Image (cartoon, rainbow, N blue to C red):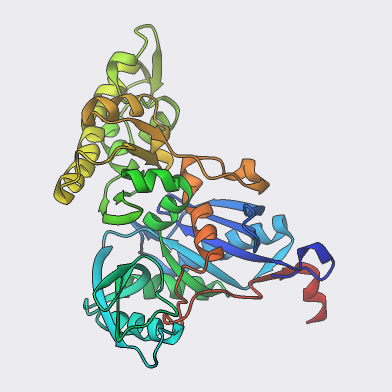
Length: 415
């Protein structure tokens, strides 16, 4: 984490973020300052995913080999040797719970250890079977019935309570992902949900406070979340995303899946009325028929209903929270699917709220390599790690803060 050859790096830590997407694996090394400065991007690598689908391992050796090749590419670019990673995971098993912990004040004044004991009591009340706690956030404190947003240190009282929000994922799925990473000869420092990571980079504090919905459209999953008054209110991850769009194109246009994916990337359109009548797209059909040219409007007609279903899934989550009229900041679209032309207009028409496409927060270094909506999870995980908000994988009671997560490659000569 510290570079022996550069004295100016003394107060900076490096972290490697590994995003296990179903279509593309991404990895990046960030140098995170301790003085509130934006993270510096030192290197980024991407590789087509193998052995993983919808956030779960389907071929352990293939996924491990893919991760090893990805990290080797990243090490050469960033000139570092990666030893530990923070893994970003997207899986439909995500669950959100709340628990209250209580502790008596040991002395006349509330001490930090009293708040820690209350937080530990809340953590012990997490009882969801077959789920692994990956993130916890304190919602507020109460001292003898009086509410506090911050820790009530140095105040007189007898009983301190804390309300904690727990976010968990399927334990078996996480264990398989960790096994795949360890087989690539690196250790897992922490696990981070893609919902929290994306929100940390894509949403501003003002949007969280005013109320906002976030929709991340991945390759095989579609993640939705709702924020209000600065807190995460609801979250959901469903199978779908770009894979459903590819299937809709394949069935609607009678083209092979491989060609449907190419058509989606190059010519996808969310609203048929936005298509130019004169614009034609060449596609390869199924069977022995020759290639043919189709109007772009036909592509929009094939995927518009699928996009509507994904937007309605978010609308149902917002409706369950009862805050449909309180989301003043509207909707933020993230993920690579957010780049589909006309999607913003379709979402605004369907949901009647302002919509924008997410962009990663301001960075320094090689920032132009992580400037797409699908890169928000990489940047957000680095921000959460730098703020000590990720529990350690080995010891969930402590925060992930590795001091030697990466090291210069020339250091290998000493081994």
